[in-house]
Image 1 (cartoon, rainbow, N blue to C red):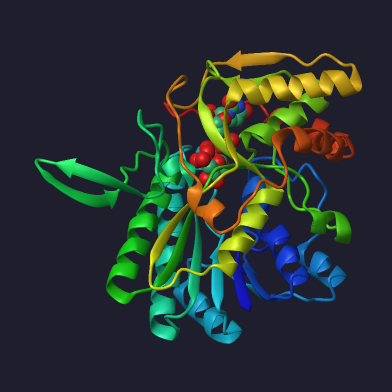
Image 2: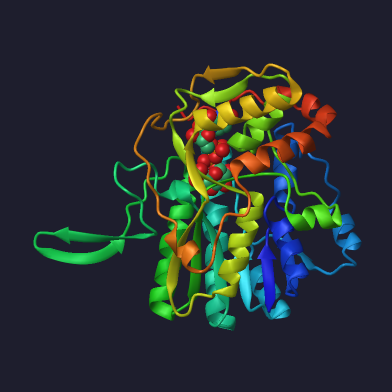
Length: 379
Ligand code: USQ
């Protein structure tokens, strides 16, 4: 199978490429190195050292056929889909930071424009060039927000005034980034309805981790961001513990979010590629487990203290975001289990491995101390 990974230089794109190469897929990839530039612009960089994409690909004997370009450019998207002859496209090439989208009008509209355009470019190119292509699109668990009822996978059985229907579950994202993913969801749903495109829309939770078996095998790391714009919560907590910085829990810390390890993310995407949507728009809630943030902070603290004997403190900083800090949360993830997903790595397995990898890059983490403190305020 030929798979085209858009955003192949990214946190998930690169380990996914390694996994697919190892499993015998033909891997094509595109990137414009936007994340590297944007992270540099906020004074940061990957806390785990990574080489350029070209150097990493060279170590793989250039096994990845690479296209340099921007997926918000329709001609580029048409050209690479035609040239690769891909059977499946994994779209990981959107602006992926909620805080970035909340900095200003400019970053909000940039996020909305670029993200929506890129998905529309894929939809139209697939419709025009080859409607058999399986589109695997990365959405977000954050599209649903935190409703006071269970969260199903995309759709809800509704009874109203004596009639019933299966309708899209209400989306109540809490940043312009999450809103951009919601627009993608509706655009993909329509593309399936009118042209029968094969879509797997992946509502992914927060990913954590530094490794997959292939990263270890090839000694080729993926990026690992820890700054207040691009770093996600557990990756930040680990780095904070390593340099003796108090863990920055935003607000009360009883916010619940869905999480999965990098290894599980790659495993799930591989499974979805092996089970293509056929003339359907299918939603996967992609996560392993959900936790309150306080549980994550306590886990990092306890593991660090017990392994290294150094004290870790937890600081409940004023929440820079507008979000509920204590709420009901019960999302389903049966669709992945139905195609064979079983947890590969638990939080408890992964935390010590992450601590070790981050400690091996401790000087870089110290050098990024100034970009850890949250300064992007939703209000
Ligand atoms: N948080 C802290 N301390 C921190 C950083 C974050 O308490 O130092 C809290 C946030 O307030 C939030 C939660 O942790 O309640 C998650 O924040 P995050 O920065 O780890 O993740 P988020 O902004 O939600 O976005 C990330 C990815 C995004 C993906 C999303 C999945 O950047 O691409 O779509 O996770 S989800 O969270 O399910 O929407």
